[in-house]
Image (cartoon, rainbow, N blue to C red; front, top):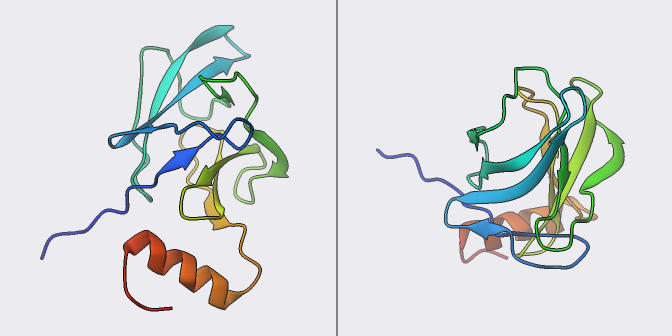
Amino acid sequence: MSKSLLIMDLSCPQCAERLTDGCKVRLDAYIKESGQHGVMALSAAFGDYTVVTDMDVPEGTVVEFRCPKCEAGLAIPLECKLCKAPMVSLNLAQGGYVEFCSRRGCKGHALGGIGDIDQMMNLMNRMFETPYD
């Protein structure tokens, strides 16, 4: 049995421009410790932590992400529950949002923006294109 991947269609919470390109989400990145600026391509598959970049980003490095369209910062005033680094947020086309940790190697992430469990299940059904409401 093959594993089905959920490819998230993501956009900037500031300018609403689509950021998903195929199976990747391309974001501008800045590493304060080393002064590096560049582009990071993150996997758009939920639960896949693949990162492609030309920058040197060792495990544990915190990255500041910006929208490549409007240059708005994507960090939110929320710490990762696993490592305390700033969280980053992007909007989901189906409604709600996805948050992920800005620390390289941390697996902290969450789907959100839904007020109750029934609404969260409706969001998941829309994302998986299942017929259940």
